Image 1 (tube, helix red, strand yellow):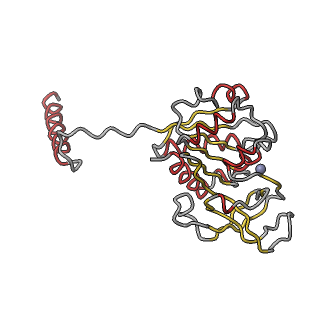
Image 2 (cartoon, rainbow, N blue to C red; image 1 turned 30 degrees about the horizontal axis):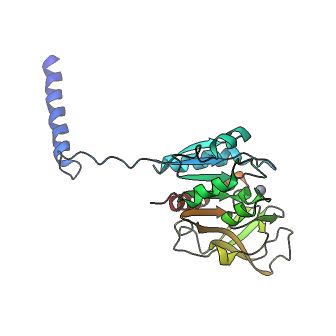
Image 3 (cartoon, rainbow, N blue to C red; image 1 turned 180 degrees about the horizontal axis):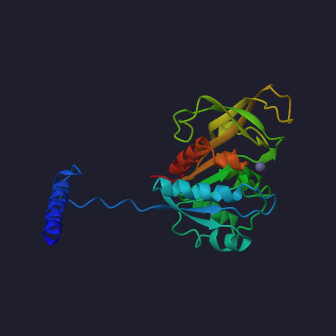
Length: 261
Ligand SMILES: [Zn+2]
């Protein structure tokens, strides 16, 4: 028994040594490069108005996108107290981006000008769905975001068009695709102020306006904001949308871009 075990150990060492020499394509003496440090994303889900039931799945979806891709670590800002403490210059230190996931209303950011300055200084801001139903009383916030929610109808299939197939947040999508969600309308068309990513060129059949009529309804965009990067998608009302791999890839592309090099 003893000699058999020893023979097995010798063979195992020889195989291991061979793998070390030939296994990885590099010199066995050069250390593996250290992985890039993870970025940090603060996900804000505090609501001062309507609260979407999809918020828990939104939180886990964003966190899992960061983990699965080795891209970022996620922390959460869920309450009025969290907002007071974290959406400040001190509280944001060390974060690369904030993500407003279905926030609503006036969140109570202590100093909006300082918060917007933080984005302008070269950080990322991402918003999904009712991020545009947030801070209707702050022109500065809405200008940064690039749109203000106005109304929506019934949940309906949206016939969505890709506006810029070269953008990584929408490059994986068919040039036209259908997704069922609550389809937001905005205060006005701001195509000139943003880099459009997704839009609808017909009014959807959701009870708002004449279904099928020609239109230009933006659904996702990005924009530069000083040295910062802002990404917004109007999708994300339904749990099923957050679980849709197409939507998750959309968010991944937006996050990669907003997080910067
Ligand atoms: Zn909604």
